[in-house]
Length: 228
Image (tube, rainbow, N blue to C red; front, side):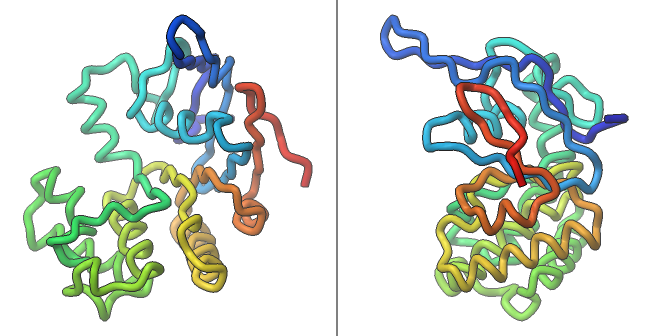
């Protein structure tokens, strides 16, 4: 793949239980293209979340390379890596991780405020994305005043507000009822197709995985193409 937005080569990661080494990732190779949406499935404990954390610059691998827009994530300083995450990566988790004391608008603007963007510009961009995900009428509501689906929409807007090269999602619909999850799934596909966003989504949900362009299965520390 030419110029992937996110890639890794020969990625290895183990954990230790006392003196026992537990391999989790074993020579993982992956490349995500611009506008591509990819699902990663696998049994609990197979290393799906670990893979996302390593790719996202949150957990250092034992070996291998991760690049985001051609930049070597683990060859740079911690400060530079944090700046890269803020600029080029978005994160969405099963639980929204919104800050309870702030409004939806303030939460969505947070990555831009951390970047020290002018407050008015940050809020304007956050409002744009909140409107895009269907929350334009809930800007001033705090997380406790939003439904589960609305909180996840706000979290997605926060992930997109920096216009990242790739969005990493860990079970983004795992904490939602089926009806709400289906609405969120459709919204993600619409966002992907409208804005050429790249998504790497860890999920147990075959319905969500089925909407992806590629489905990979992690087993014994390796990624395999899932039969469609």
